[in-house]
Length: 184
Image 1 (cartoon, one colour):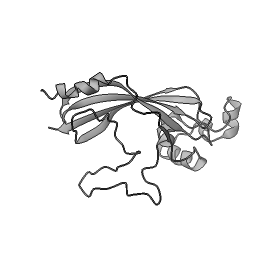
Image 2 (cartoon, rainbow, N blue to C red; image 1 turned 90 degrees about the vertical axis):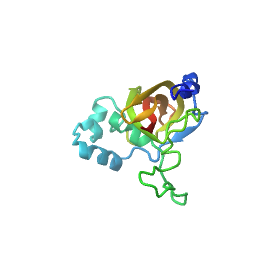
Image 3 (spheres, rainbow, N blue to C red; image 1 turned 60 degrees about the vertical axis):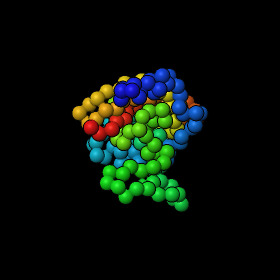
Image 4 (cartoon, rainbow, N blue to C red; image 1 turned 135 degrees about the vertical axis):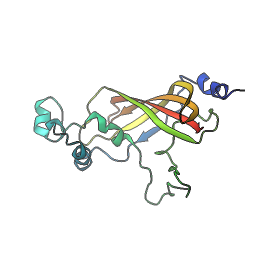
């Protein structure tokens, strides 16, 4: 069997939701301190993101989080107080374990020792404002394309999931492409 053929079970699973109904809540609600820290290095001075009066004048219920911050607020914690260590290996370039660090994989792919994000898209539906608490649901495999690249042999896998606020309103749909590979 060729290395490309080893990816056929994943290709056959395209369209399947691997989320199994799990709701993954972001580590924290959108708060002013985190939003300020997100905006500072960007020097993003749009008043919608820091002035509640301006945001309300433009029809929003409060200060609006920039869409580029949504992933920050939907990410679960890498580690929780009292929980096990996220870093379980002393190996060079070891990655953390756990839900926050869980790579996007089906369990059907051939063994891979490396991965990285190759693309990220989001479709926006509702604004996220201060105080919102985001969660994500679903983990649908949209595409799997085996490819040999300069870093090794593997496959580009595109995933899609929904982001909702505490009122269960759909605020965004995320699409993320990961490259899972073996260095070559």
